[in-house]
Length: 199
Image (cartoon, rainbow, N blue to C red; front, side):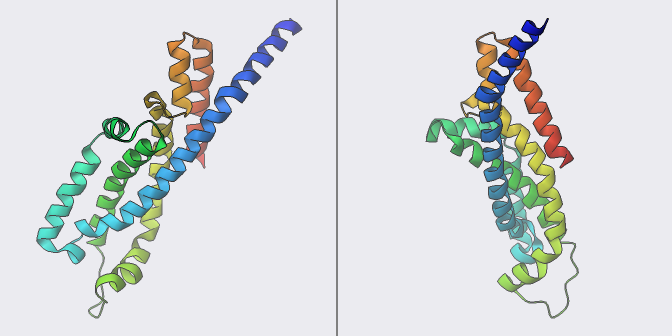
Protein backbone atom coordinates (compact mmCIF):
# COMPACT_ATOMS: atom_id res chain seq x y z
CA UNK A 1 0.00 0.00 0.00
CA UNK A 2 1.62 3.32 -1.10
CA UNK A 3 0.01 5.18 1.80
CA UNK A 4 1.56 2.84 4.35
CA UNK A 5 5.02 3.16 2.82
CA UNK A 6 4.60 6.94 2.63
CA UNK A 7 3.67 7.09 6.33
CA UNK A 8 6.61 4.82 7.19
CA UNK A 9 8.99 7.04 5.21
CA UNK A 10 7.73 10.17 6.97
CA UNK A 11 8.10 8.46 10.37
CA UNK A 12 11.62 7.26 9.55
CA UNK A 13 12.72 10.66 8.22
CA UNK A 14 11.47 12.33 11.38
CA UNK A 15 13.50 9.93 13.55
CA UNK A 16 16.58 10.36 11.39
CA UNK A 17 16.33 14.17 11.51
CA UNK A 18 15.32 14.64 15.15
CA UNK A 19 17.18 11.83 16.94
CA UNK A 20 19.65 9.91 14.77
CA UNK A 21 21.44 12.89 13.20
CA UNK A 22 21.92 14.85 16.48
CA UNK A 23 22.84 11.64 18.31
CA UNK A 24 25.47 10.67 15.72
CA UNK A 25 26.85 14.23 15.70
CA UNK A 26 27.23 14.37 19.49
CA UNK A 27 28.65 10.84 19.58
CA UNK A 28 31.32 11.77 17.04
CA UNK A 29 32.13 15.08 18.75
CA UNK A 30 32.52 13.37 22.13
CA UNK A 31 34.58 10.51 20.71
CA UNK A 32 36.92 12.80 18.73
CA UNK A 33 37.63 15.06 21.71
CA UNK A 34 38.20 12.00 23.90
CA UNK A 35 40.50 10.47 21.25
CA UNK A 36 42.70 13.59 21.05
CA UNK A 37 42.81 13.90 24.85
CA UNK A 38 43.71 10.20 25.07
CA UNK A 39 46.58 10.72 22.62
CA UNK A 40 47.98 13.68 24.56
CA UNK A 41 47.70 11.90 27.91
CA UNK A 42 49.20 8.66 26.57
CA UNK A 43 52.20 10.50 25.11
CA UNK A 44 52.69 12.26 28.44
CA UNK A 45 52.20 9.12 30.54
CA UNK A 46 54.30 6.43 28.84
CA UNK A 47 57.68 7.65 30.19
CA UNK A 48 56.36 6.87 33.70
CA UNK A 49 56.43 3.13 32.88
CA UNK A 50 59.67 3.11 30.90
CA UNK A 51 62.84 2.23 32.78
CA UNK A 52 64.88 4.46 30.48
CA UNK A 53 62.96 7.54 31.66
CA UNK A 54 61.66 6.70 35.14
CA UNK A 55 64.33 4.34 36.48
CA UNK A 56 63.57 1.06 38.23
CA UNK A 57 61.65 2.46 41.21
CA UNK A 58 59.86 5.10 39.15
CA UNK A 59 58.87 2.46 36.62
CA UNK A 60 57.25 0.35 39.36
CA UNK A 61 55.27 3.33 40.66
CA UNK A 62 54.30 4.34 37.13
CA UNK A 63 53.03 0.86 36.35
CA UNK A 64 50.94 0.78 39.52
CA UNK A 65 49.49 4.20 38.63
CA UNK A 66 48.59 3.19 35.07
CA UNK A 67 47.22 -0.19 36.18
CA UNK A 68 44.85 1.62 38.58
CA UNK A 69 43.82 4.13 35.86
CA UNK A 70 43.18 1.54 33.18
CA UNK A 71 41.51 -0.93 35.54
CA UNK A 72 38.96 1.59 36.78
CA UNK A 73 35.79 1.10 34.69
CA UNK A 74 35.19 4.21 32.61
CA UNK A 75 31.44 4.06 33.32
CA UNK A 76 32.03 4.21 37.06
CA UNK A 77 34.59 6.98 36.60
CA UNK A 78 32.18 8.93 34.39
CA UNK A 79 29.41 8.54 36.97
CA UNK A 80 31.61 9.88 39.78
CA UNK A 81 32.77 12.78 37.60
CA UNK A 82 29.15 13.46 36.63
CA UNK A 83 28.27 13.86 40.30
CA UNK A 84 31.26 16.18 40.81
CA UNK A 85 31.09 18.25 37.61
CA UNK A 86 27.42 18.11 36.68
CA UNK A 87 25.76 16.89 33.48
CA UNK A 88 27.82 17.70 30.39
CA UNK A 89 30.22 16.03 27.98
CA UNK A 90 33.19 16.81 30.24
CA UNK A 91 32.79 13.85 32.67
CA UNK A 92 32.50 11.42 29.74
CA UNK A 93 35.52 12.97 27.97
CA UNK A 94 37.65 12.79 31.13
CA UNK A 95 36.59 9.22 31.91
CA UNK A 96 37.24 7.96 28.37
CA UNK A 97 40.54 9.83 28.10
CA UNK A 98 41.96 8.66 31.43
CA UNK A 99 40.96 5.04 30.93
CA UNK A 100 42.22 4.74 27.36
CA UNK A 101 45.38 6.77 28.02
CA UNK A 102 46.20 4.33 30.81
CA UNK A 103 45.97 1.43 28.36
CA UNK A 104 47.88 3.07 25.49
CA UNK A 105 50.47 4.68 27.78
CA UNK A 106 51.24 1.37 29.46
CA UNK A 107 51.68 -0.43 26.13
CA UNK A 108 53.88 2.35 24.73
CA UNK A 109 56.03 2.32 27.85
CA UNK A 110 56.56 -1.42 27.43
CA UNK A 111 57.58 -0.86 23.79
CA UNK A 112 59.92 1.97 24.78
CA UNK A 113 61.88 -0.48 26.95
CA UNK A 114 62.57 -2.70 23.91
CA UNK A 115 64.21 0.07 21.85
CA UNK A 116 67.95 -0.29 21.26
CA UNK A 117 69.43 3.16 21.72
CA UNK A 118 72.85 4.22 20.44
CA UNK A 119 75.58 4.60 23.07
CA UNK A 120 75.61 8.36 22.39
CA UNK A 121 71.81 8.72 22.55
CA UNK A 122 70.61 12.06 23.94
CA UNK A 123 69.09 12.43 27.39
CA UNK A 124 65.90 13.84 28.83
CA UNK A 125 63.53 15.76 26.55
CA UNK A 126 65.70 15.21 23.47
CA UNK A 127 65.64 11.46 24.05
CA UNK A 128 61.87 11.59 24.39
CA UNK A 129 61.05 13.93 21.50
CA UNK A 130 63.65 13.03 18.88
CA UNK A 131 64.62 9.44 19.63
CA UNK A 132 61.77 7.59 21.36
CA UNK A 133 58.47 9.09 20.15
CA UNK A 134 59.40 8.90 16.41
CA UNK A 135 60.25 5.21 16.80
CA UNK A 136 57.05 4.48 18.69
CA UNK A 137 54.78 6.64 16.54
CA UNK A 138 53.65 3.94 14.11
CA UNK A 139 52.68 1.63 16.98
CA UNK A 140 51.09 4.60 18.76
CA UNK A 141 48.85 5.37 15.76
CA UNK A 142 47.85 1.70 15.52
CA UNK A 143 46.81 1.70 19.18
CA UNK A 144 44.91 4.97 18.79
CA UNK A 145 43.00 3.79 15.72
CA UNK A 146 42.11 0.58 17.56
CA UNK A 147 40.91 2.51 20.61
CA UNK A 148 38.98 5.00 18.40
CA UNK A 149 36.42 2.37 17.43
CA UNK A 150 36.01 1.43 21.10
CA UNK A 151 35.75 5.09 22.16
CA UNK A 152 32.97 5.67 19.58
CA UNK A 153 30.95 2.77 20.99
CA UNK A 154 31.54 3.87 24.58
CA UNK A 155 30.68 7.49 23.71
CA UNK A 156 27.32 6.36 22.37
CA UNK A 157 26.62 4.28 25.48
CA UNK A 158 27.46 7.22 27.78
CA UNK A 159 24.09 8.63 26.74
CA UNK A 160 22.57 6.70 29.64
CA UNK A 161 24.36 9.22 31.90
CA UNK A 162 22.58 12.13 30.23
CA UNK A 163 25.03 13.05 27.46
CA UNK A 164 23.04 13.64 24.25
CA UNK A 165 24.69 10.85 22.24
CA UNK A 166 22.88 8.00 20.51
CA UNK A 167 22.66 6.15 23.80
CA UNK A 168 20.71 9.03 25.33
CA UNK A 169 18.07 8.78 22.60
CA UNK A 170 17.98 4.98 22.92
CA UNK A 171 17.49 5.24 26.69
CA UNK A 172 14.74 7.84 26.24
CA UNK A 173 12.95 5.74 23.62
CA UNK A 174 13.05 2.60 25.78
CA UNK A 175 11.86 4.47 28.88
CA UNK A 176 8.89 5.75 26.85
CA UNK A 177 8.26 2.25 25.42
CA UNK A 178 8.92 3.47 21.87
CA UNK A 179 10.68 0.23 21.01
CA UNK A 180 10.38 0.79 17.26
CA UNK A 181 12.32 4.05 17.60
CA UNK A 182 14.85 2.37 19.90
CA UNK A 183 15.42 -0.31 17.24
CA UNK A 184 16.18 2.34 14.59
CA UNK A 185 18.57 4.12 16.96
CA UNK A 186 20.38 0.90 17.90
CA UNK A 187 20.68 0.06 14.20
CA UNK A 188 22.20 3.52 13.61
CA UNK A 189 24.70 2.86 16.42
CA UNK A 190 25.66 -0.49 14.88
CA UNK A 191 26.13 1.10 11.45
CA UNK A 192 28.21 3.94 12.95
CA UNK A 193 30.50 1.49 14.77
CA UNK A 194 30.84 -0.64 11.62
CA UNK A 195 31.70 2.44 9.53
CA UNK A 196 34.40 3.55 11.98
CA UNK A 197 35.78 0.02 12.16
CA UNK A 198 35.86 -0.25 8.36
CA UNK A 199 37.55 3.15 8.08
